[in-house]
Image 1 (spheres, one colour):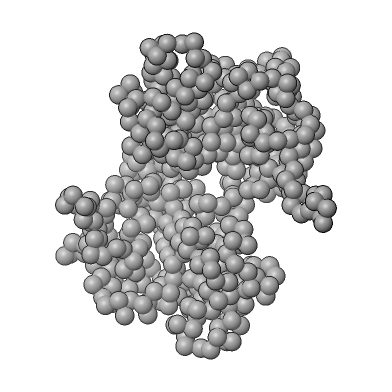
Image 2 (cartoon, rainbow, N blue to C red):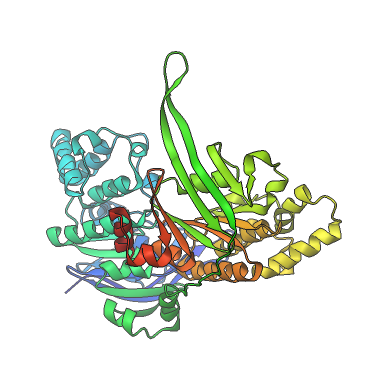
Length: 525
């Protein structure tokens, strides 16, 4: 029996210039009682806009629906329903979990107050009773020290804890439907697994139906009963999880699935070490005494030693806060450290910044790492301006064009700015900027985590191609075990600033020794 029925839904937006952007185009689907419906698609496919329209959360009248559009909840039409009536359904009959809990939770109010507020609005109980119910909800969603957590602000919680709070708010009034919009996207793989297991348990316990929205098919596979695949505002395929994954009919669905099946490349091992790290520490002062002497530190990287052969890829994996990015930034000279870092037998503390050009880094978020005021030619050329001032303007432009073509961009992109490119294209620009100086060692800090799955696959294949052609050495930093498996010859598993396990790809994935490593791998399957 269907609890929610969406028929011929079209969603458009009026643009400032008078044009209309059609975000969703005539889609229909049903949600059955007790079912988990997965809606999957890449950025811009229309999946989140569809979810927001169910509760009337779009920016009307800028947003609008076609006349034949219909969304019925238990037979009641929701489109064009008065806001007063919709408020009874929002947070009451239908709960909503947003993608980024830090943006959705009020930073000025404590957790307990925010959960209690929705209970008081919909259940009409006193603040005291609402707080008691809020405490039970935090316990239900697995928050440790729940009574103390009622009194903290959102910024005092981890990402996984904030998402649990959002789930507690969403289920506070025992909704019939829970809409979860990318609830695990910003979380580490082990926390993702915990949130998915929590949602499955809550569905069974509360007898809810769930609409689970994600760009990641592997996440959908773990939780959904049926799947709708969206592309360019349309549903291009729908069916059971088994049918969609085992016998996909649409070419786009096949592309999404194949994007997870990347080939592992075995790089030829050199006899020379390009990198040697000895007893590396990166400590940040946390507390000082009356005399200004530091008495407590955050030990972001704590006594790490390792070696890396030229031409290899070292994968560094771990959850947020494990120290992997701090380690990468120390190698490239962006963090102060104690201990020793040798590159090509040279201690980087003894060489000038000019000589360090053979080590470059590509950051996680290309939009924030590219200067929005510079065009692409200026961004990519900047390294040449600093390190190779002897080159003429014509020679520099020639090199910029060559490296842009190498990463799959065009000469016509030279005069464009970062905002004119997609996320995947911006990451290609960031890679080109690093390659222009012909580095020997390239540090890739979560280079695909902000990208859709098909774009991730494209960037990983590009990096493999460049490595083979240029005989580069990579340090590939990620919390994504699938990406680590695709790219790495050797893997270092980090936890709490230390390397807890180190070995080649086959050893780590087939015979992990540490329980922490085993949990990371199990969560990614």
